[in-house]
Image (cartoon, rainbow, N blue to C red; front, top):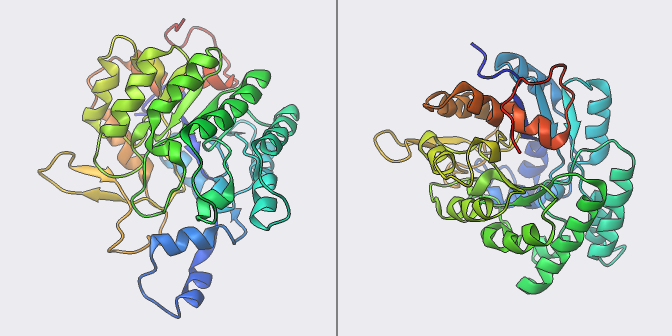
Length: 347
């Protein structure tokens, strides 16, 4: 049986890079390339359309629609996503990121500024081809590579507030990245500081602010998820992706009187190289995480089978499950749906 009336994965990467051959060249035939080495290489490679595998999984798991997005740090582009949306308008909508500004700064052609990044976001959203901003907030690529030192908390929040202004102008959701893969090296300071989002949510109460991964991108630590929950419980406009949560983790949000099913969006990071690790008899028995000792995974990880299995164990009403799996996405991203009154009303 299909899990919900209308199933939407709100965090999908339909693009991929053929990193294997280039990685082997750089490592002179090493059998176990490291995630840290892969992360550096992905910034240099051009992506390709991986939608054949995505469409196969959509049919397999009865997923009706995907919100596809570029991964700004790993070379994925807005243009490829637009092509896919135009080819399959009933299956895909897209988020945007200021990729052109990012690439020019990476090549040393310009000095990256948040103003330039926001001008690009404004242009992209003005086309009407995108439904939001993500993955994560715009950031200087030289900070991500380590070529520049980290800026202060105050300066970074000011940058993110400027991006929030663009989201407010276009009345679209914007994403705030949280969690850590344990393999790729991440230098986005906010990803380990979800509580910073209090300032953003309070300053722009009408802008939907969504936590990428809901604090869990990898590992078993619930610390960042607890911080995301604190922000979501404090502001009406804050939401969380939950596709990488194990079953028990959902109840923290569902039982909180200021959160509930109406604040959760199913989003799994489909397309990312994050395997599911199993440790039977322990808590949690399975969870997503990059395993550095085993090296980079070379197959398309089946995150949907695992994630939907976690949700299937929830003892909640189908109406709440329908909100998490698609109803909230329809509302926030203004997705086309043929009928009214099919999802529980949310103020």
